[in-house]
Structure formats: structure tokens, C-alpha cells
Length: 116
Image (cartoon, rainbow, N blue to C red):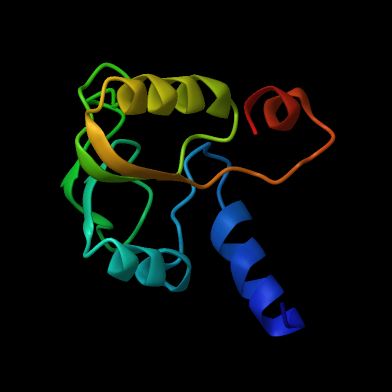
């Protein structure tokens, strides 16, 4: 990643003190094209451009909802484990076609070793 892109990425994801970070379109657009568009974003609300046709915000509680179709998930980084567990449950119930999760790649953590 070029230094210019790194600066852009970090500024998108660290400017505010909230736990919800919007995913830049250059990250999700190609993935969306690969599945002919995402049907659901259950952890929506921080992005400037909607990623999926259907969205659940914090008020909707995406963890309490049924998921369907092709799903994009950029969960709050303070507790991604519950979102990973929800994704596994929804997949095991055959509710989804695909689920793409954007989580930190910290290979020295329990999150990584327990779920990847």
C-alpha cells in the first residue's frame, strides 16, 4: 500500500472516537461486484455510501436480526467476536449465500486463533 493510501485509510478510520468505522468504497466495491451486489449490511451506519440494499444500524441491532443473501459486515472493532459468531450461525442455518467480514488482521490475538 502506498504511503498516500495508508494516510487516506488511517484518516478514514481514526478521525473520530466512535467504534463504527465506514469502509472506503475502494475496499468493498470489487467484492460487491463479485457477488452482484450485497443484499445486507447488518452493521451499517458509519459509511457515507450505502454498501448493501438492506441495512441494519445500531438502532436496528443487526445481531438480533435474521441475515440473508450476500452479506457485508464491518463490525465494531471493540467486539468483533459476537459478529463472527453470528455470521457462523447464519451460515450454518443456510440463511446466507456469502458473508464477507472486515476484521483487523491481528494474528497474535485470540480473535484470530479462535475464529480463523
